[in-house]
Amino acid sequence: MIGWLWLIFAFVVLATIVYSGWLWFDMQSWKPDRAEYPEQGAVIASGTSGTRFETLKAQGADFVYLELAPSGRLPDPGFRARFAAAREAGLKVGVIQPFDPCARADPQSSRFSQMVPRDAGLMPPAIALVQLPTSCNPPVSEAAVTSEVLTLINQIEMHAGKPVVLKLGEAFETKFRIAMMVERELWLIRDRGEPRYAPRPWLLWSANSRLDSEAAAEPIEWVVVQR
Image 1 (cartoon, one colour):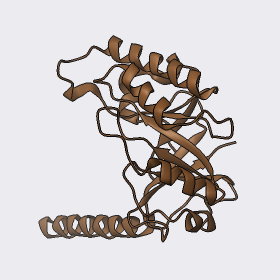
Image 2 (cartoon, helix red, strand yellow):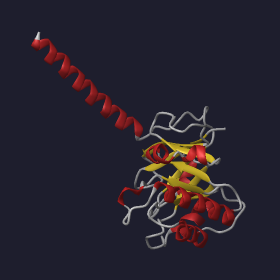
Image 3 (cartoon, one colour):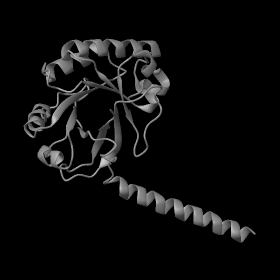
Image 4 (spheres, rainbow, N blue to C red):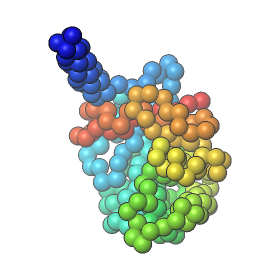
C-alpha cells in the first residue's frame, strides 16, 4: 500500500514538473486570441534600450505604454527617444506613472509633467498602483496612501486633459479597494488567466508579463484591450 502511495506521489510530482515546464515554454510566445481581443499592445519598462518599435508593430502591437522612472530616481534619459521612436513606428503611445506610496503626490506628478507633453493624441495616462507601503520609512497610514493616490490622479489628469487609467496590482487592490473608491477605467494584471480581483470590469489586461519578442532583448509585457 505504501509503495502505491509513493508511486502516486511521484507521478503527481512529475506531472507538476512537466506541466510547469510546458507552461513556462508556452508563455514565452502566448498572446490572447486576437479574434476576442482585436486591440493589443505592449509595455516598455523604464530604462529599456534598443526596443525595435517597427518590429513590435509588425508582430501585432497597436499601441505601447512607456513607463516612467519613479520620482525618487534620476530621470530616464532614454524616455524621450523611446517616445519619438514609438510614434515614428506608427504606434499609439501612452505613459505609465508608477505610484510610490512612500512619497507625496507632488514630486510624482511633477515628474510626469516634466517628461510627458500635453498632447491630445496620446492614449490616456496610466497610474501603476502596485507597490505596497511596507518599506516606507517613516511608515505611512492607509489613509495617507489613499489621499496621495487621489491627489496624484487629479494632478495628472489636469496635465493630460483626460481621465487616467488605474493599473491595479492585486495586492494593492485587496488592501486599499481603490476600484470601488475611484470611478476610472481599470487595468488589471494576471498571466494567462483573465483577472477577476476587481469588483467591476477592466479595460486593459496585462496578459503575459514575459513575452519573448524579436523587438527587444528582454521579455516584454503584453497587454490587450476589452471593448
